[in-house]
Structures are given as C-alpha cells and as structure tokens.
Length: 198
Image (tube, rainbow, N blue to C red; front, side):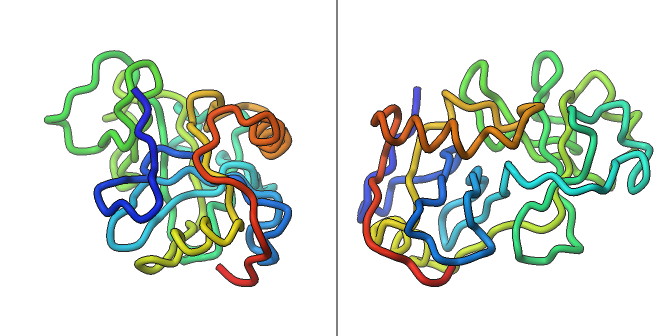
C-alpha cells in the first residue's frame, strides 16, 4: 500500500516517496535530480539517487565492496554534510528488527529499503543486507521548506513503486521519472512556477 502525501495535512508523510526536480527548480544543487525521502517530520531528509561519482567503493571503503550494488561507486547524496556517509540497502531474506546494524526506512512488502550503519563490520551484515549503495552527503530541508517548494512547483512527488532506487543505471532515473510525471503515473504533486532556492 502506498502512502499518499496530501499538502497541508500534518499526518501525511513523504517517507519512501520520490521527488523529481521539475524544470522550474532553479537550484543547481538539484538540477535534474531524483531524491528518495528517508525522513519527513520536523523537516525532511533524503538522498539524491542519480548522481554517481567517479570514486570507486573499492578505493574508498573496500570492506563494503562485496555487498555493494552496481555501479560500485559512491554517490553524491546531496549538498548537506558531504563528508558524512549514508548507506542504503535491501534486506537479504527476512528482516530481523532486533539486529542493530540495519533499520528499515521503507517497509512496503517487496520494496523494502533500509539504512545501514556503516560503522558495522561488513561481515556482520552478510546475509542480512544486499545491494548496498553509499551516499556522500544528503539533501535536507528545514520544517515547512520542502512542502513550500513542492507547492511552488519545484518538485514533483511520485510513488517509488515504479522506480528502483538502487538501479544499476541511475543516469536514466530523471528521464524515467519525468516521463512518468508527464503521463500522470503515480504523481502526488504537480509542476508549477519557479522555485529559486532549496
């Protein structure tokens, strides 16, 4: 079941939804980006899904290479705290909420995705996670900021169901999402006027 975001409804959440930068979004940090929202409450936090860097995981954090998704590079997760790293992965088998190194952010059956504690020893997560992706930095919004940007038309909000956040071909994500939005597929908020800053 998909959670539908409703503007101005304080009980509504964007967690697990995809933000697609509209053509009206003027902030160069988010030009043609696709963002997965991981937290939405007092502000919001997400990662940019379609900005791979040339940094190979084998060169930066080689211990995680065996669990990494293709392409096995670090992704630029956003403009905030670029020295911080966030790991996302799928559960490998049944999810055990008692273990401490991996917590589900998206619990939709068949589409589960969680945050990995990169302070763990990778061998402790073998058999628990798969398709790990590591992001440098993240996208963050203060309370009300993201909602205002969406209502001003800076972002399209789509269900994540039609997109694989950990796709091996991230360069195609923005075009896929823009096409889906143009056809109205899974759209939760629609294009509007220009938004200057994030």
